[in-house]
Amino acid sequence: MNRAATFEFFRILAELNPAPETELSFGNVYQLLVAVVLSAQATDVGVNKATRALFATVKTPAQMVELGEEGLKAHIKTIGLFNAKAKNVIALSEILLRDHGGVVPADRDLLETLPGVGRKTANVVMNCAFGAETFAVDTHVFRVSNRSGIAAGKNVLAVERALDKRVPQPFRVHAHHWLILLGRYICKARTPECWHCPVVDVCTFKAKTPTPVKKR
Image 1 (tube, rainbow, N blue to C red):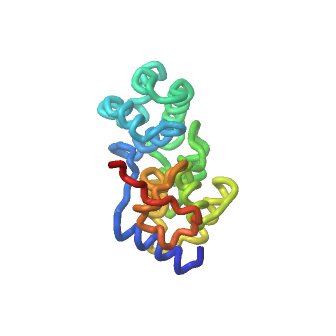
Image 2 (cartoon, one colour):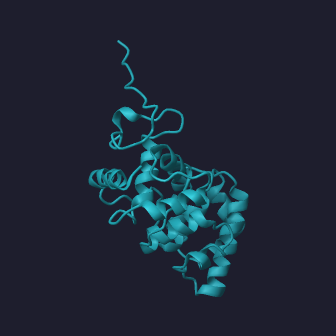
Image 3 (cartoon, rainbow, N blue to C red):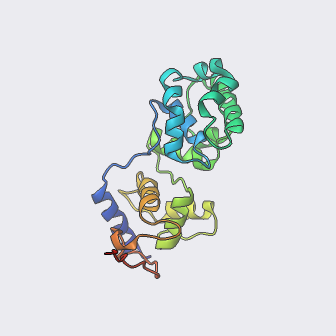
């Protein structure tokens, strides 16, 4: 996709949804970090259900450490890999208290040193909490970037770098949210719903799926 088409792609998405946000529920930066860690290989809906009661009482790393690993497990046992995630959340909370004064650092490299925090999680926190122009590449972003021609790449890091190079201003801060939402609700993995995609005219995907015929 050329530069003009890329600009138009994001212009259309921005016009339809000027201020997209993560669908994870949280009340502060620490809760956002925990929610994103928990969301690995899980849905936002599932994470929100599990954290609703948790976040009503646990708002700081100190409160999480006091709750303890077993207490946390009781809240998140409906989420996949909850045992490992509980261990990581308690460990990262202890590190935040010990090394960062209980504050989530606004630094991607430091975030990636925390247990359970990979590059994607760090990018989400940097973007959603601190307004950084980062590109968190999940399965939706990876699929849409490759399928549409916005930013092709054989792995998530390649797609992230391509997005960083190709996404123009003023769309950089919100770009990954638009791509996630497009992939989650329209540009689906098995059957992309091209018939109602707002950017179908600039997308390079050749096998456009036809409008489904309604049964009488």
